[in-house]
Length: 213
Image (cartoon, rainbow, N blue to C red; front, side, top):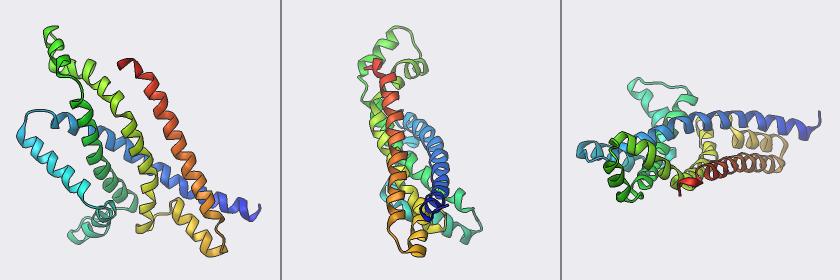
C-alpha cells in the first residue's frame, strides 16, 4: 500500500465518525424542530415563551461553547458523558433551535385561507395540519433545511476540540506526521462529496413534493 493510499484510508476512518454524528444529529434535530415549531405556532403563551427562550439561548451562543459546556462543564455537577454523546446532545439542541425557527416560518407562510377552507370542509385541526399545511410547509423549508444539513457536515469538525477523531483531526495528524498538505485536499474532497450527496437527496425530495406548490 502506497503512502497516499494509507493517508486516504486513515482520513476515511475519521469520516466514519463524521457520518455517524451527522445521521444521529439530523435524525434527532429534525423531529425536535418539527414538534417545537408546531407548539410555537399554537396560541399557548407559556409554551411559546419556553420555546422562545430555548431558541434564544442556542441560537445566540456559539456551538463550540455549548459543546464545551456539555462535555467539560456538566462533569462539574456529576454528569459525565462520552465524547460522542456530548457532541450529539450539543449539536441536536443547537440545530433543533435553528430548525424550529425554519419550520415555524414555513408553517406561518401558508395562507390562512387554507385553514378556513379546511374548517369549512369539516376537517379537524390535526387533519388540517397533517394533510394540508405540513406538506406545503415541508416543501417550502426544504432549501433552508438542506443548508442546515450542509452546515452540519462542516460543523462536525468542531468535535475535534474534545478529542474525537473526525475528518479534519485525522487530516491534521497526517499533516503533522508527513509534513504535506495533501491530507487537506483529501479532506476537502470528502466534505464536498458528502455535501453533494445531501444536495442531491434534497433536490429529489423537492421534486417529489413539488405538486404541493
